[in-house]
Length: 123
Image (tube, rainbow, N blue to C red; front, side, top):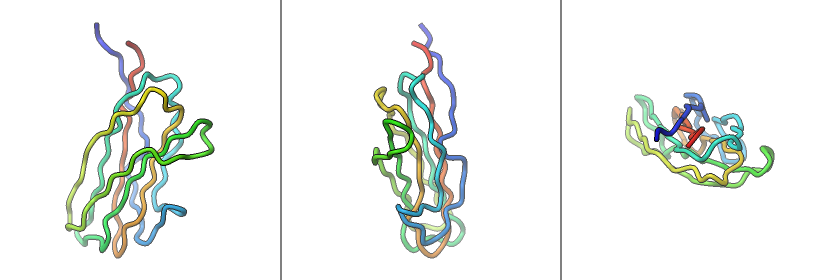
C-alpha cells in the first residue's frame, strides 16, 4: 500500500544576518499546522557563504501545542568552513501539532537556512 505525502516549506531559503540570537533570530519560518498529518520528516540545510561565519549558525526546530507558545524540539548546527553546505533530516513525531524553524547564532557573516517537511498525509 502506498503512503501519500506532501512537501511543506517550513523555512524558505533565508539569509540569517550575523549576530542574531535565539530571542531575535535572523531567520524565522511560519508556524506549520501539522494536525492533518501523520508525522513526517524534516529536511534542512545550513549554507555558508564564500566568507565563513566566525561561529556556526544554529537551526532550531520548535514545536507548539497552539501555534503561539514554542518549545525547543531539535537543534542542528552548521560549521565555520567557507561555502560549506550542511544537510540532514529529522523524524517529526506524530504528536507534534505545530512546527517552525528559526536560524540564529552565526557571527561575522550571514548564513542561509532552509527547512522542508515531507508530511505523511494518508496511510
